[in-house]
Image (tube, rainbow, N blue to C red; front, side, top):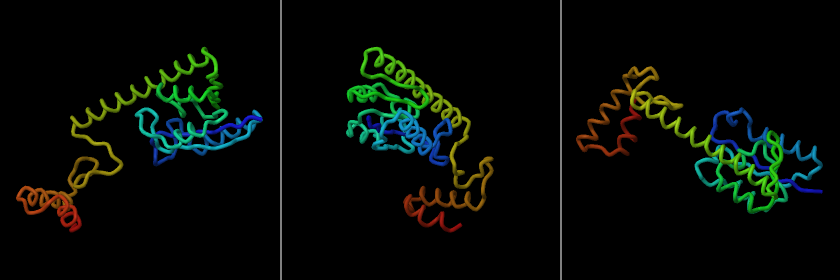
Amino acid sequence: MKTAAVYARISHDKQTGTDREGKSVDAQIEACVALAEERGWIVGDVFRDDSISAVNGKLRPAFEALLAAQPEMIVVWHVDRLVRLTSDLERVIDLGVNVHAVTAGHLDLSSPSGRAVARTVTAWSTYEGEQKTERIKLASLRRAKAGEYRSSMRPFGQKRTGQWVEPEAMAVRRAVERLLAGDWSFYEIAKNEYLKL
Protein backbone atom coordinates (compact mmCIF):
# COMPACT_ATOMS: atom_id res chain seq x y z
CA MET A 1 0.00 0.00 0.00
CA LYS A 2 1.37 3.42 -0.98
CA THR A 3 1.93 6.28 1.46
CA ALA A 4 0.98 9.79 0.42
CA ALA A 5 2.39 13.01 1.80
CA VAL A 6 -0.11 15.87 1.86
CA TYR A 7 0.95 19.45 1.16
CA ALA A 8 -1.27 22.51 1.56
CA ARG A 9 -0.58 26.23 1.24
CA ILE A 10 -2.31 29.59 1.14
CA SER A 11 -0.62 32.71 -0.11
CA HIS A 12 -1.23 35.72 2.06
CA ASP A 13 -4.72 36.17 3.42
CA LYS A 14 -4.01 36.27 7.15
CA GLN A 15 -7.44 37.70 8.01
CA THR A 16 -9.65 35.03 6.46
CA GLY A 17 -7.15 32.18 6.46
CA THR A 18 -8.20 31.26 2.94
CA ASP A 19 -6.69 31.34 -0.53
CA ARG A 20 -8.09 33.31 -3.47
CA GLU A 21 -10.75 30.63 -3.97
CA GLY A 22 -11.80 30.75 -0.33
CA LYS A 23 -10.12 27.43 0.46
CA SER A 24 -8.43 27.32 3.87
CA VAL A 25 -5.36 25.20 4.54
CA ASP A 26 -7.45 22.96 6.78
CA ALA A 27 -10.05 22.49 4.03
CA GLN A 28 -7.28 21.69 1.52
CA ILE A 29 -5.83 19.09 3.88
CA GLU A 30 -9.25 17.57 4.50
CA ALA A 31 -9.88 17.21 0.74
CA CYS A 32 -6.40 15.74 0.17
CA VAL A 33 -6.83 13.18 2.96
CA ALA A 34 -10.25 12.23 1.55
CA LEU A 35 -8.71 11.68 -1.91
CA ALA A 36 -5.91 9.54 -0.47
CA GLU A 37 -8.33 7.42 1.55
CA GLU A 38 -10.62 7.05 -1.47
CA ARG A 39 -7.66 5.72 -3.47
CA GLY A 40 -6.64 3.36 -0.67
CA TRP A 41 -3.40 5.17 0.17
CA ILE A 42 -1.99 5.62 3.65
CA VAL A 43 -1.77 9.28 4.64
CA GLY A 44 1.73 9.95 5.91
CA ASP A 45 3.13 13.35 6.81
CA VAL A 46 1.04 16.47 6.35
CA PHE A 47 2.91 19.66 5.43
CA ARG A 48 1.38 23.15 5.54
CA ASP A 49 2.63 26.62 4.66
CA ASP A 50 0.30 29.33 5.95
CA SER A 51 0.30 32.77 4.32
CA ILE A 52 3.38 32.15 2.15
CA SER A 53 3.50 32.96 -1.54
CA ALA A 54 5.05 30.47 -3.92
CA VAL A 55 5.74 33.15 -6.54
CA ASN A 56 8.34 35.37 -4.90
CA GLY A 57 10.94 32.69 -4.17
CA LYS A 58 10.74 33.12 -0.38
CA LEU A 59 11.55 30.11 1.76
CA ARG A 60 8.56 27.87 2.40
CA PRO A 61 9.55 25.77 5.44
CA ALA A 62 6.93 23.05 4.92
CA PHE A 63 7.76 22.77 1.21
CA GLU A 64 11.44 22.30 2.09
CA ALA A 65 10.48 19.71 4.74
CA LEU A 66 8.33 17.90 2.15
CA LEU A 67 11.26 17.65 -0.27
CA ALA A 68 13.61 16.51 2.49
CA ALA A 69 11.14 13.78 3.53
CA GLN A 70 11.38 12.22 0.04
CA PRO A 71 7.76 11.06 -0.01
CA GLU A 72 6.47 8.14 -2.03
CA MET A 73 3.82 10.41 -3.60
CA ILE A 74 2.38 13.88 -3.01
CA VAL A 75 -1.28 14.89 -2.74
CA VAL A 76 -2.30 18.56 -3.05
CA TRP A 77 -5.51 20.53 -3.49
CA HIS A 78 -4.23 22.01 -6.78
CA VAL A 79 -0.80 21.87 -8.38
CA ASP A 80 -0.34 25.63 -7.95
CA ARG A 81 -0.53 25.13 -4.17
CA LEU A 82 2.67 23.07 -4.49
CA VAL A 83 4.61 24.88 -7.23
CA ARG A 84 4.26 28.14 -9.11
CA LEU A 85 7.86 28.46 -10.25
CA THR A 86 9.59 26.16 -12.70
CA SER A 87 12.64 26.03 -10.43
CA ASP A 88 10.48 24.53 -7.65
CA LEU A 89 8.86 22.11 -10.09
CA GLU A 90 12.29 20.83 -11.15
CA ARG A 91 13.06 20.09 -7.51
CA VAL A 92 9.85 18.07 -7.24
CA ILE A 93 10.68 16.27 -10.50
CA ASP A 94 14.08 15.37 -9.04
CA LEU A 95 12.25 13.47 -6.27
CA GLY A 96 10.95 11.07 -8.91
CA VAL A 97 7.45 10.96 -7.37
CA ASN A 98 4.00 11.56 -8.78
CA VAL A 99 1.75 14.42 -7.73
CA HIS A 100 -2.00 13.92 -7.33
CA ALA A 101 -4.23 16.99 -7.12
CA VAL A 102 -7.81 16.99 -5.86
CA THR A 103 -8.91 19.54 -8.48
CA ALA A 104 -6.44 18.92 -11.30
CA GLY A 105 -5.86 15.20 -11.48
CA HIS A 106 -2.58 13.32 -11.67
CA LEU A 107 0.77 14.66 -12.83
CA ASP A 108 2.87 11.73 -13.98
CA LEU A 109 6.38 13.05 -13.39
CA SER A 110 7.91 9.70 -14.30
CA SER A 111 7.38 10.13 -18.06
CA PRO A 112 8.66 12.75 -20.53
CA SER A 113 5.10 13.66 -21.57
CA GLY A 114 3.97 14.02 -17.94
CA ARG A 115 6.94 16.24 -17.11
CA ALA A 116 6.21 18.34 -20.22
CA VAL A 117 2.61 18.84 -19.09
CA ALA A 118 3.78 19.74 -15.57
CA ARG A 119 6.29 22.25 -16.94
CA THR A 120 3.63 23.83 -19.15
CA VAL A 121 1.12 24.11 -16.29
CA THR A 122 3.78 25.61 -14.03
CA ALA A 123 4.92 28.06 -16.71
CA TRP A 124 1.36 29.39 -16.90
CA SER A 125 1.18 29.59 -13.09
CA THR A 126 4.43 31.59 -13.11
CA TYR A 127 3.00 33.88 -15.78
CA GLU A 128 -0.20 34.38 -13.78
CA GLY A 129 1.79 35.24 -10.64
CA GLU A 130 4.02 37.70 -12.49
CA GLN A 131 1.00 39.37 -14.13
CA LYS A 132 -0.70 39.71 -10.74
CA THR A 133 2.44 41.33 -9.31
CA GLU A 134 2.55 43.81 -12.21
CA ARG A 135 -1.14 44.70 -11.72
CA ILE A 136 -0.59 45.27 -7.99
CA LYS A 137 2.44 47.49 -8.65
CA LEU A 138 0.53 49.52 -11.25
CA ALA A 139 -2.47 49.96 -8.95
CA SER A 140 -0.21 50.96 -6.05
CA LEU A 141 1.58 53.52 -8.22
CA ARG A 142 -1.74 54.96 -9.38
CA ARG A 143 -2.98 55.26 -5.77
CA ALA A 144 0.29 56.87 -4.67
CA LYS A 145 0.12 59.46 -7.47
CA ALA A 146 -3.49 60.21 -6.53
CA GLY A 147 -2.53 60.60 -2.87
CA GLU A 148 -4.56 57.55 -1.89
CA TYR A 149 -3.47 54.74 0.37
CA ARG A 150 -4.45 51.15 0.94
CA SER A 151 -4.04 49.74 4.36
CA SER A 152 -6.05 47.91 6.97
CA MET A 153 -5.30 50.83 9.31
CA ARG A 154 -5.95 54.47 8.58
CA PRO A 155 -2.96 56.78 8.65
CA PHE A 156 -2.33 58.54 11.94
CA GLY A 157 -3.84 62.02 11.76
CA GLN A 158 -6.31 61.36 8.94
CA LYS A 159 -9.65 59.69 8.40
CA ARG A 160 -10.04 57.32 5.47
CA THR A 161 -11.90 60.14 3.69
CA GLY A 162 -8.77 62.31 3.86
CA GLN A 163 -10.14 64.64 6.53
CA TRP A 164 -7.89 65.47 9.46
CA VAL A 165 -8.35 64.01 12.92
CA GLU A 166 -7.38 67.26 14.61
CA PRO A 167 -5.89 65.99 17.91
CA GLU A 168 -3.71 63.52 15.98
CA ALA A 169 -2.87 66.11 13.31
CA MET A 170 -1.71 68.51 16.03
CA ALA A 171 0.55 65.79 17.42
CA VAL A 172 2.02 65.22 13.95
CA ARG A 173 2.65 68.97 13.52
CA ARG A 174 4.35 69.20 16.94
CA ALA A 175 6.45 66.14 16.18
CA VAL A 176 7.60 67.53 12.83
CA GLU A 177 8.49 70.88 14.41
CA ARG A 178 10.56 69.20 17.12
CA LEU A 179 12.25 66.90 14.63
CA LEU A 180 13.20 69.78 12.31
CA ALA A 181 14.46 71.82 15.27
CA GLY A 182 16.65 68.90 16.32
CA ASP A 183 14.99 68.69 19.72
CA TRP A 184 13.77 65.10 19.41
CA SER A 185 14.75 61.93 17.58
CA PHE A 186 12.24 59.69 15.83
CA TYR A 187 12.28 57.40 18.87
CA GLU A 188 11.53 60.29 21.23
CA ILE A 189 8.69 61.46 19.02
CA ALA A 190 7.13 58.01 18.96
CA LYS A 191 7.64 57.59 22.68
CA ASN A 192 6.47 61.00 23.84
CA GLU A 193 4.40 62.97 21.40
CA TYR A 194 1.93 60.40 20.07
CA LEU A 195 1.17 59.13 23.55
CA LYS A 196 -0.02 62.59 24.71
CA LEU A 197 -3.30 62.47 22.79
